[in-house]
Length: 281
Image (cartoon, rainbow, N blue to C red; front, side, top):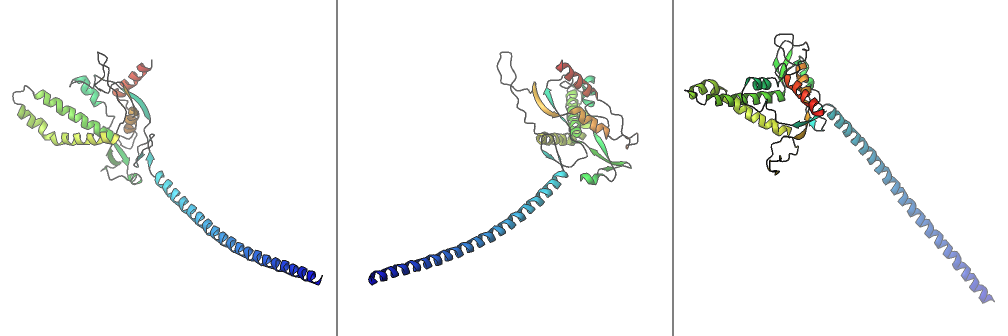
């Protein structure tokens, strides 16, 4: 019996020892867990501070970007453009069709039609004094009322008309008794201008970059192989709006250039409007 009691005592002691060891082990594990949690919280705090700092930096960059965009303009198509006092031009669909008034040789009606493509002031506009800086413009031609600038599209048309005049003048020289003398007097002095115009129009076309898809015309036998560009619809800037806008700011040498002139609707715009109205009937 004593032996049995001894065994029971040993068993009880071992149970107590095991309990103490388990308690110590749990205490150790709990301490390690607390340490890991503390490290995790510290890391979370650092990460949170990094996220807040990064968010502030992104916000500052976004505001800077918005500020930069605010000083520029975007066309309806979305492409970014330079600063300009000229407002955005609305877009319109235009179907290209042959116009014999322009696709013709030199004659009074065709010459007049080409001359009326440019609005009042021939595309030159006046920017009031002390205002060009807000548009980051280089100095224009100085006048008492403001500085004179040109509008690219009207410069391009001027060049095209100059090439046209040069071409038909050459054509008129054929059969003359002394074409070389006439050439030297009339054409040779303007050759550099013509060469300039070829390059200027080249760059203008590449800048505009009209990517409209054109398909071949239908031949008499039903085949398709030649592309003439007629019957193709393009998305264009409203030409009449371009003309009106330029006329509203145009230079008038014989009057006070600060006064807004009466807008002159060019015959070409009237013809275009009549043609569009007829097409819609």
